[in-house]
Image (cartoon, rainbow, N blue to C red; front, side, top):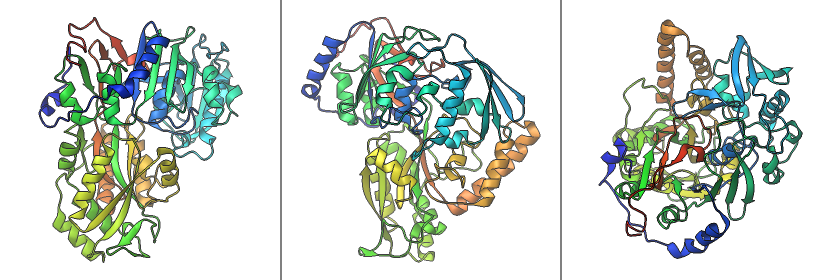
Length: 544
């Protein structure tokens, strides 16, 4: 039985890549699974390397995906951004600058110790102060002034200003016991077995093989885990990940390559599921330095100028990109092209390129002869990223800008990006964090660590703050907020501090006896997967 969401049906026939079946590569590993695992087991293939087992190290989606099985949060959030109780049974805002959270009395960590308000307070403090974090939780928790323990099960949080969305911000914060707050990043490879309170407990973490085995927790405070055992395997190579599914060595894969979706969706042995867009992908230029390290003038001569410092050059790059072709050709339509980071439409989007206008802007900026720039991208992080980068490079070559593509190990990439070491980057930011003006405030706020470009604009900061305050201010507030958003968009059009490309549609493929139910606030990937009655056709029946 195969689910065919509307965008999948519309995409069938656009593109299909027949992969060579590399069963021999996977066979020995599959045999090991068969020997060592039994009962209700779910095997998941992940696309990106797990960088850190420390739940507060950084806001990095692949790590969060793993750790959400092991750790719990105060509140949960479903696919439609609705909040639901998790460790907290209720929360309230008694004054504009305070929030009270009441905890479950039966919640325990995996070592059996009770979870109390002081553990939540310690977790907040630790997440805000982790040093050398490439993408800090501090950006989401910076408004918290202090915490106050009203009772063992009630925590009061004091904020600098009214923060109506604080429960949403805390929905990504994993809670650890107070005794673990001084643990180092390396310690958590071992501490994972004891410091979680989530539905699954770590049994094995092989960092070298990038394989994690989880067992259902016997004392979980929430709905019973759906699986006895969950095996998470990192398979960065797209072809190998699809092959692992076809060969029967995994049950579900994330980041299904868009080109393979139209192939698998026709096959009743598999279910293909798409969700609403979960990431904004964009180009981030270095705007802070007069001389940028990865820029050459045409003819390979070094230059002491940084073309990205000039908004005319940034606008030219944005105008040269054919976003519609980019998403249709490179992503088979499984993306929403956009030229704005604002989630609500303020003006018509400009998806088709304007190369003549772009070339004029380059001439006006003194770069008529073009230049060469290195585009750094995180390796194996975003779906079809290398193909996207190559398509962007081809489009920019038409206005005289030569792009050299440089994939980098993700941990090294995000560290260097945070230090401003690159001239041009391909970046993504999650869209499932419901805070006012997200993702724009995170990307371009002058004090935000996620601002990789170095671009600062005091007027933009004021407009972002004003628009955020008006988010829940009724009809009059909505009109005023719309006016602020129009001003924000005008600055974005004039300055082009980033060049948005598209919103990524996540794709999953799984065996046909499974389905994905992402409407429940279960908080982790494994428990959104539900077994169905055995399908009439098996993989072997389908000719695999």
